[in-house]
Length: 322
Image 1 (cartoon, rainbow, N blue to C red):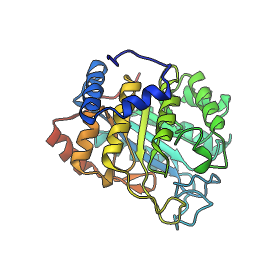
Image 2: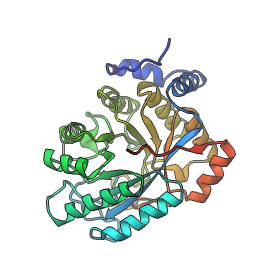
Image 3: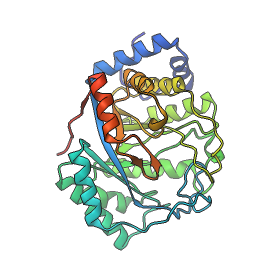
Image 4: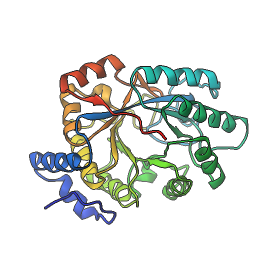
């Protein structure tokens, strides 16, 4: 069976059958699809900066930035524009082509803070980089203003499946997430949308999340697959580590279901061996977050990534900016 066709009508049963293929067959099929649409030696490097940290009113069970959890995280107001752009310059010099800015807000509110974010987006684009934001929920006007500022992508993760969502988050609904994604797409901004593995969910819930993503038309341009990083003080602090091969299976299934998307190996890389990451790249991951921090959680630094890329013969993907 060939999986190289672009489809937006996947069923959970089809995706589960792919996910459960014998491991060597799954990797072969994923690599075949990956090579059909992508250069298998290129990896997109992105940098993620927390531009406003902590005190978020959402109760996401995995997040140390939630005001509902006692994680001893130091709260910080929105950063000034100049240091954000300086961080973007440093990221570009280190090889990143996309600069992502995250603010711990439930939703965007018009005013000076949003105006500052728009200025940040414009500044990142002027550096010749792709600009991404994750700011919470948007209305139509805000999505359009971000597009006018030059935003490349908007990150708004689904986190998990519709039927497991309320086990993780109660302060917003799944439909809230989907509506913001629709507004972003309507404004002409590309989507960055994925989820988290290892939050106590079952395989069926992981498949349910992929089913929603893979039936978007078009597919999200970026699909981050995160491994939970348990943080003391959050409800998920005692979750066991994700089996590395389960991460590889998720990457491979996402690659087959969404052939042209950049499948991003995201949170949890610090705990992954070089061998696990190599298998994820073999399974079709072609994007990572570089730098030593992902918002508030540790991440491998540039030096480790450079060494890994050198060992594997991989090269940075060039920026796609207009």
